[in-house]
Amino acid sequence: MHFLLRKFLCAAFLTLLLFAPVPAFSEAERNNGLIKEDYGSLRYSFPLADGWSFEKLARALLYAKEIGSSAVIVLHEGKLVAEWGSTTLKIQSHSVRKSLLSALCGIAVEKGFLDVDATLEEIGIDDRPPVLSRAEKQATVLDLLKSRSGIYHEAAAESERMKRRRPSRGAFAPGEHWYYNNWDFNALGTIFERMTNMPIGRAFKDWLADPVGMQDFNAADVYYRWEDVSLHPSYPFWISTRDLARFGQLYLQMGQWGDRQVVPRSWVEQSITPHSPAPDGGGYGYSWWIQPSGAYYAEGYMGQFVIVIPRENVVVVSRVFSGTPSMGGLPHEVKQEVKQVVKPVSGLEMERLVEMILEAKPDSPPY
Image (cartoon, rainbow, N blue to C red; front, side, top):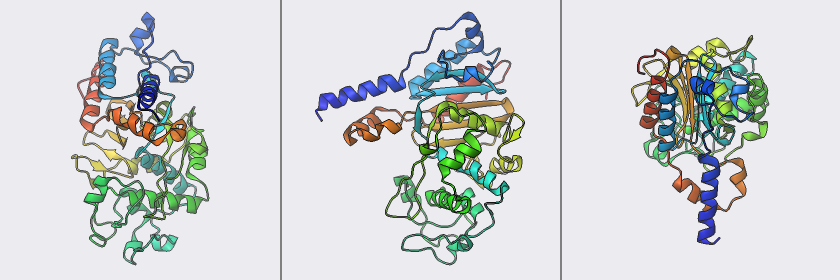
């Protein structure tokens, strides 16, 4: 493809997907926050929050655009504070998938499909040569959820950093050591499907997306990334920002949506309890990152964040464009050029964005 045409396509995608204009607001809307006019917006299913500072929110969302966010949603006490950018666009979830599957595992346990104390040997889980040792097969489903399996086999969707830091095989026994390891999460997906006899996408739609009213998710939005190094694929989700906002709100409400307990409360409580120390000074639960303040979050490559802040009763979702299902047919070189000009959002930048958002909250001390 001609170089100039590739540049044109990249510019067109970025203009359309990343920099949608912020709409004009009535005075009432100014008092309630930055709300989209789109009838697909959460404003038509969530009440609007009161008392937030429009000026401070505007500064926060300008900062979000500056650091590279393509969509931001803020909820407070189950009400919509702000919705900015391409919130209906399905973007790759990357590692946020792990927290989504964790919720499904909790439901599967309640339904009697899954025993978290079962070992890989009992379930019949192995991998390509070099196959798992007898000791490795003593890891339990719960070890995988906590990323404490002690299995350091090569894995699909493993980053270069993961490969460099991965311990040697047999270095630690199951349950003995925490290491953020894609093998654990990928094998967990295989186990979930084997024990429930349901594809992850179908289970997510039936057990989670439909009960909480997700507007964009379809069962086909979970796909499988197979690699020769392992029998267990990764399972990225194509999911919109507004659907992830509902997921964050579900966890803030301890798994309850309306009068229905969608995810068992006890599972949510255990999921957001630190079971291992994490490098950032926080902890790690059942595939959730936990801060000393009690806030917890799901995080994915380039800056996909679902942040739940219980003490403030706030959910913040921020996404970075990293491809859509429709880009599957684009030439590889175009997709690579788009990725090169999209700016990832770092953890420190996200922390500052959350601080700025909470500074706009009525009568709230700094985060």
